[in-house]
Length: 419
Image (tube, rainbow, N blue to C red; front, side, top):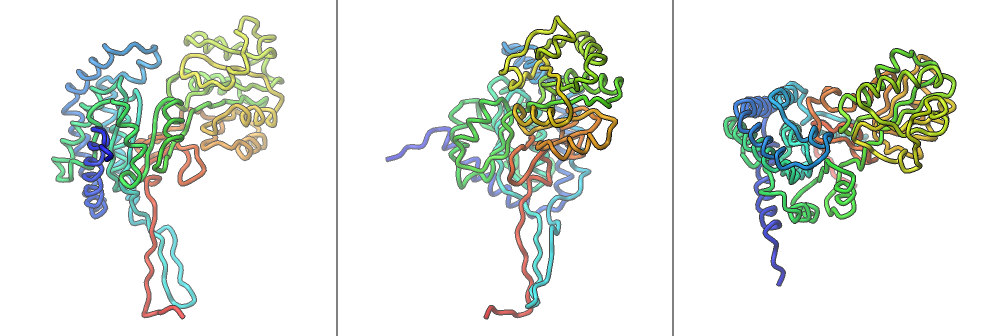
């Protein structure tokens, strides 16, 4: 006789409640969901003291690096930003009920493809406690219920944020089961979620490479994810030097621990002697270290040498890999070999070179004359994001409310029967 684990029993109960809540959500109006989002935002602000006390306890127990602690940390402005994100989501167009296509068949049948919620989302995330608020807001806007499982390092702050969100749902008159969180950070809960075919409709992992690879390997539920963000900024020979310096500094050092941070600088051989020393000086002043190929070290001799593995490393820290390349094709070859199809950018004044790069790079997000750190749901106008997707199915890039919908067909007849 099979006996379910405590984690599986809890998940089965939570998923049942989430399914019932999702059915309520699917019948709500956009105005009702927007009112709930604003109530959740107000609740986050009113519970800010509790949330900050929880994060202080999490930070006190944290033994990670400075970059890791930055991903974990919350401040009063960051709590307010979480609330603002929910309010921004409320301002977005209704993703549900949209007519994606419609046509009439020769027999007179009128067919409409319309956007509908996916159902029950499972979200597994690490370190960043604000992810729970972003996921809750995006799921609610798109009519989906969500079950969250945060990391052990943020268990207190994730619970405090969830309590505030649930209080907002309650105030808005929507089911509290629209947004639920695992009772603890037991790894068994992740295993239960991965095996929850028929209970969860989609799993979104957001965390380190090992977590995402485990989810992709073991899940019996469809997965929407990216394994890592090995992003490149390529400085073309035609680049404006001041612009290139500004973009590279921001792309690498604005926040080194996010998946959209540039991890590798590619710079054209024609411009490297004049521009690379200035870029290195800029980044060193900001505390960045380097791993450089032989051609880059010929120009700036005191750079640390890069190994083959360095160019395949997502640093998530103040370290930048550097390679000198010969033109657009060489840059694209390097990115195809080492990149993760997440986000890659070119800095160039030559429009033809930029178009060749944008057309040739096979990434979820490609940018011209802008920082890779713009790969973000908020910056795309989604209010927030539940994650970045680099797969080939369903969604790519920042995942907002519209990307968390599927579709169904409505067929309107006038008495037709099939011959």
